[in-house]
Image (tube, helix red, strand yellow):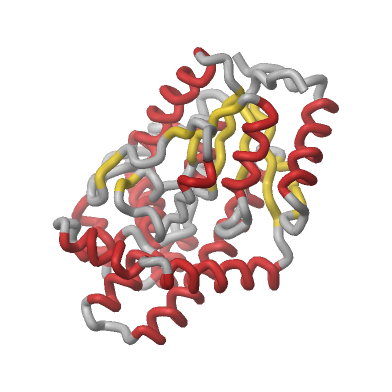
Length: 312
C-alpha cells in the first residue's frame, strides 16, 4: 500500500499488544510512532511502564523518555509535544501512528479540549489525596458537571484532577470548555476476552518482577525521586514503593498490584467506550489474532476509506 497521509491511532488496555501492532503497521506504512502513555514519558521508568524499547527496532518513536522521573507532566504538555512530533513526522513524509492506553491523552489531541488550561489547586489536591479511590469516585459522581467535560477517572491522580477541574468550572460558569476542533483520524482498538486479558496481565506482572521491577523502583528512590511522587504515579510504582518501605510483604505486593492492574484495564476499556459516545469511532480488532492478521484488517479498512483522507 502507498503511504497513508492521515493519523492512525492504536489504542487498547494494558497488556493488549498495542506496541507490537503499531510497530508491525509502521513497517508496512513507512510510519513513525507517537506514544500516548502518561508514564512512558519519564526516564528510568522502563520496566514498570512496559516501554519495550527493543520492540521498536528501526521504527522511530516519540514522547518516550522526554522527562526525568519526578518532574511534572500533564495532558497540556502532551498536547504540545504531540503537535511537535506530528509536524516532525509529516516533514519526513512518514505516516504518524499514535499508540497508547491513556485515553485522556488520545482524546485531548483528537478533540483538542481546552480544559487543560484549568489551574492547579494545591490545597484541594492535598485534601483529596488522603481520600480513597472509592470516596473520590462518589464525590466525582455527585458533582454537577458541564455536559462538554469528558473526564478520565482511570487512576486516583486523574480522579483528583477531574474533581479539581469540575470545582474550578463550577466557580467560573462563564468559562466554556467546548472542544475547539477535531482531528481527523482513523482509530483502531485492541479488544481481548476478559479471561485472556487477565491471564496476560498476571503473566506480564510476574515477568516484570523477575526482570528487575523492584530494583528499578529502588534505583529511582536512590536517585532522589520521592516516595510520595512514585506513589502518585500509581500501580507498579505505588505498590513496589510500599513494599520497599516495609508496608507490604512480597506476597501482598503481588496480590494487590495484580488486582489493581486488572481494575485499571477495566477502567481503560470504560474510557474507550466513553470516547465512542463522544463521537470518536473506534474500529475494534481481535486481540487474540496475530499481528499480521490485525495489520491486514487495518490496511483493508484504510483501503475501504479510499486510501484514507489527510486531515491537513
